[in-house]
Length: 478
Image (tube, rainbow, N blue to C red; front, side, top):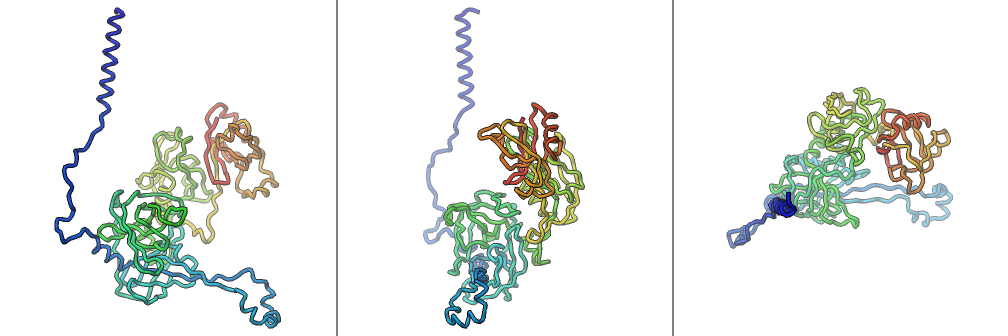
């Protein structure tokens, strides 16, 4: 081929390539605006949600609580009768007890006086007082039950024929839906703000069980426990939290979905407590350094197993990836926690588990999750992936080290006692005080186990299970 012909061919190819690129990239425009339309066709009418909001506001109440705080710092000699007599009136001026007060909102869910609110609104209260809309009467409420892990409580007042709110199916809520946040804060009457649903199934790690609805409708202090309603006036969530440094609203509010509220409220009214299933695993999300082990799969990575749990009995292993529960996909640790928590003790859970690149089906009969405010089951924390990297020194866990770092007796491994600044070990994620409990399939009990594991997987990427001050983590390193 001549140089001229080759040049012409190259030019033609370049032009064709440029044309292909041009045809692949084309911004599409919407038609130009030709007119603007008024949503109301009548001159004497306005666009309003007043009717649906009015019905809902009648069911949102103000809640105030009183908690007696005893002064623990009073010197015991102040109780001596001689001291009291000697100092006379001065003794009576010494502060002994004080009453702590707080305010929040609640939602009437039945005509016979049942009211839902947040647990943090009434937590520890000696007295709960409810004020209804447009009624100055104060009603003393009784506590029906609380779910501290979900931040939900049910109280009741002795009054009938009350207006109440109807529930919507929160699984039908979509991003962009118009919503209204209703509260009865500060005892000054109802407050209504408008917004849209910004996100669903949000996890912000303030409760053990959560899948919040996020909204830009203002949720301000005192609105906790109030109602988040849709444009029909139906309850889709219970206002719970805001993300703010100042305490004011910045367009990021969260509500507990109505389906979760209803499930918990039904259980509390029926038995006064909530029972949840217990699997017995500690999990983490798939981190970037674990992505290569699980491909495109989503799920919760098992990093710890309670030795006396259904998970242990069923043969679950560390680094199993739980991808589904009863056919419902699991995207992360929060999904797994909510899925298991929605099941009852002794109920069966069909797990889909990715192990060694293959999906396995494991059916487990759940135990009962212990009340964390009683004697929570202490699950020993487990670790992360680590490797024999330069700049790191490990030692066996001696009785002295165990006492110094307050390491539980049931945690085994080697402890990192020194790590060089800017070393490869530090860059991989290791820190002084971390305990390496497992390397791949080898459990670490002493330095000889650690050396054996490093030799077996020399020059290979290895997973290290690590206990750290921040909890359980997995580190992958060579």
